[in-house]
Image (tube, rainbow, N blue to C red; front, top):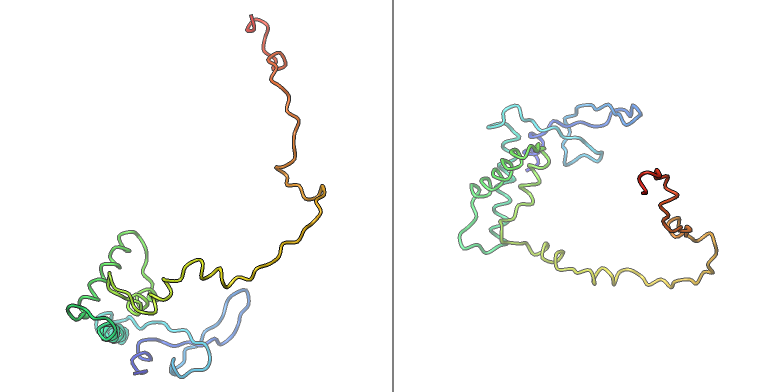
Length: 178
C-alpha cells in the first residue's frame, strides 16, 4: 500500500540549484511512488513507537518475514520477533562500536535480512561465480612488440656506481684509528 510509504516520509523536491553542491528543497505532498522526478524522503520519526515511520518499519518487517517463509523451508516458521531481535542485536553491536545507524541502514537491514546459515537463490547464483567466469568476459588483447629505448627506463632501474667502503674517507680522527 503506497499510503504507508507516503505517510512515513516527509517528501521534498529540488526547487533550485544554488551552485557549489547546494540545492534548495521544497516540501511537497505528492506520492513518492507516483512521482516522475527525484524526491528526497525524510522519515517522520516524531513518535518513534507509534508514528507513521514505525508503521512503515512494521509493515516491511512483516512482508520480509512472509517472503522468507515462502522462499525458505525452515524447520519452524520465522517470526517477526526473531527478525527484530537479530536486527536489534546487530544495531546494538554497531552502537557499542561507536557506529551511527542511519535510517537507510535500518531499512536495508530489514529488506536484505536472511537468517544466518540460509541463502536465497539469487545470492547463491552470484556467490557461485568464480574468477574464471569473469575471465571469460575479458577479451584477449595481443601484446605489441615495441622497440626499447632510453625513455622506457623506470627511475628505480637506473644504475648508480657503487664505490667500496673506505674508512679513511669517513673522516675518522687519527686517535680513534690507532
